[in-house]
Image (cartoon, rainbow, N blue to C red; front, side, top):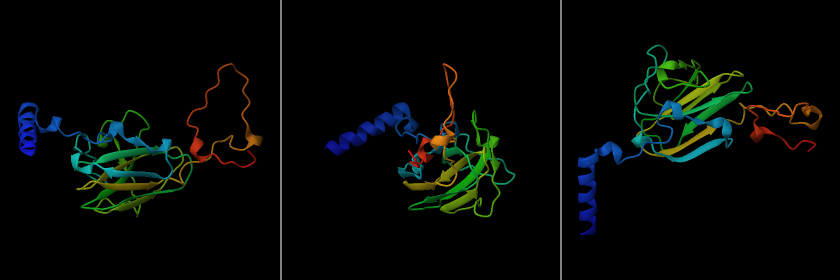
Length: 193
């Protein structure tokens, strides 16, 4: 009886509000909400990504290079050193993982991105992808799957230790207000600390 009442309530709510309001999309469904991997953890790993409820709102990418239009989720990072980043999906079911590059801020559509044309970043079905990074370039990673699954993104090699990681490179503060942007504390070492 309880199951029938619950089913009836869900049915009535879907008629009243539409099914879109009953199902929440992943937090990084829209490209402007891409998860910034620069905040860690390093490597990044997310369990049970809700790919099934992703929408294709603004996911389309340019026809030249790698045209995508399926619902997916987004991640981004700005490389602070030359290195390799790789991503893999656990429990793949028609998966796609593709890296693009674009502006660091203000991206609201996949059409603003450029496909990173490298041998291990194919614009095709596949559960693994990797690229070599360039310092200062912001990358966006699109991921799509037909079922909820885990995603692993190895960012160990793309972030440099802070300039003042070693005590001999300590920064002199000669002003009352001091700002230091984009410090990767996650990459700091304990050398001579």
